[in-house]
Image (cartoon, rainbow, N blue to C red; front, side, top):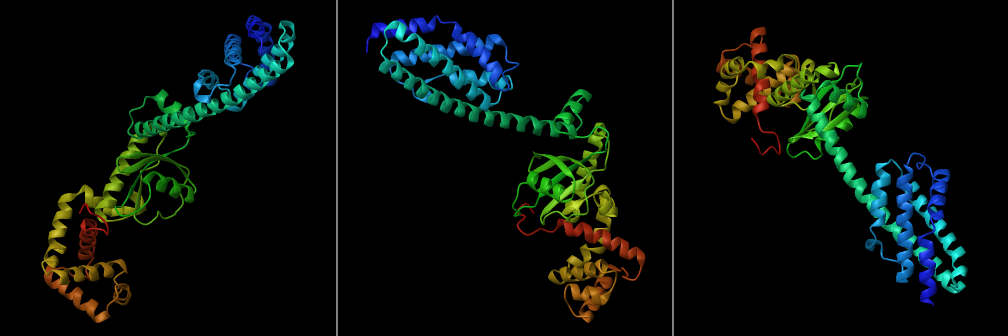
Length: 388
């Protein structure tokens, strides 16, 4: 191959600015997304493509994908301008087509043989393949990095929103981004998975919300999850071993108030050993177990501690008392639920009265015993709970 003719050809190609103008025109006319790309940006990429083509011709071989930097430069620039990868690759192919057409037109003028021109054509298409391969790698890496960054921003916004540290502009901007309503009440929600229970708290929370007909925008927080619930959640139970605590519905600007409520609900649910979807309404008087520790300690000392002094038999007595209370003071139903004979249940209730001085037929005893037992249930280890 006549190297002098080849050098004359590439010098002519390098000074042929009609390539640049034609490339810009074709890109704007043919490729979606290029309408708003600045002209100077398109001219710069056309110059880079031409220089890369000349370098490939002079080297006599197409470069390996990881040997060229142009794809990264182009992908970073175009993705920042909002152009899709499909359009970027199509645009590069069109740019190379323009270069190749001008190359084939100039080759005879500089005495470059037809077989040499065909070789250059093959080289440039191989260059296009290498460019595409590297561009896809860059796109993948950038997309992953972008996804991680987006997830991090989303997580931080949720955490900041529920604790009330965002100003009005930040709050409304995030709400628009994550499609949260500004004119409807929302609820803060917290989720916790019991030790020994499989599943990510964020996923568990979102799954429950979807089944309940609502939507949870959730993020990890400590060992649990925190979220913002929109829509009316139906009476759908959460999975076993998962506690989902809901705060009261509030305007978005008052989300901190709902978060504080959800936190109190979660702490109360832990205290009484409840899981599932819970709120203050469901917990009812049990919320007082946490907020009135003096009353809780007093009732424990009166209705639980004397029974526990009986050891394992004391636990059976408390189990029988709990069954009696849970089944509307029905001896047959309570006995069947444990299960024991009705006479066994009566004997255990009698022993409870002897040990505590309470009367299972009096309202005050029933109220106090319910409070004390609810608190006691929450202090007992759950299966797989190594913290207790």
